[in-house]
Image (cartoon, rainbow, N blue to C red; front, top):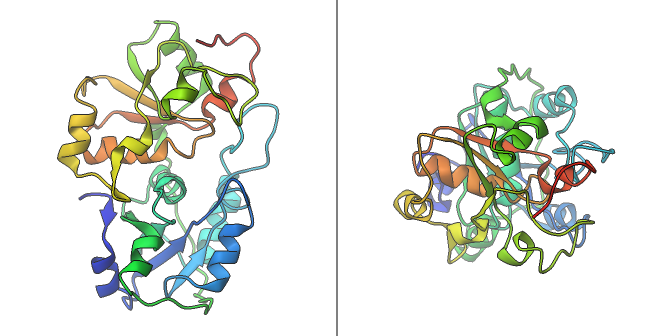
Length: 274
């Protein structure tokens, strides 16, 4: 697998000085739970990055519920955590893949290719009896040098063009079917989906708490033309990242994330909803 490591691999490389581990655990229902869980116990050597405080910027009129973080601030935090472009980074959450996926996507966007998601997350790490500590590590400060990969990011203007049929691309909604269809909407102010989008719930890319294989992911997206530009979105740019990673694992090259996602889309009164 190109973008995933299993707990055995991480266990065997736990004391490698060129490895940095990032705990991204988070709960939308209890926003302090991730940090509490980290404080109680985490993978040795792991630093903590919070989805809202570190991996997003404050909510504004547009940009969705989890806007792009201020990149200068984020890069500074990476340096404080001993993360530069020369180290290998392993991000984990509880196994959902979405919170670690957000960190993984951000580093990929900044040009860091040696970043991976721990398949199965902390849950399977703990179940395997692997070591856990409450010790908070410290690292020498470094300077992260970024090379922005614009081909990883779609903005609302591009999505409008695709939705209106003015640009030939595949728009993928990563939320569960009930939200895509507008039957239920527990979070956002409006229900439905961006016109023209197909539905590929991110959770269908998992089995027994782990990402499916590259071959299985390829089968999931068998109806998607690999020659076309693909744009994935969800509610706020978090749960679309496992689909982004799954597409990349399956060999799709032209993949973008609409980071603002549906919560950004509905912030514009003129944008249509199906």
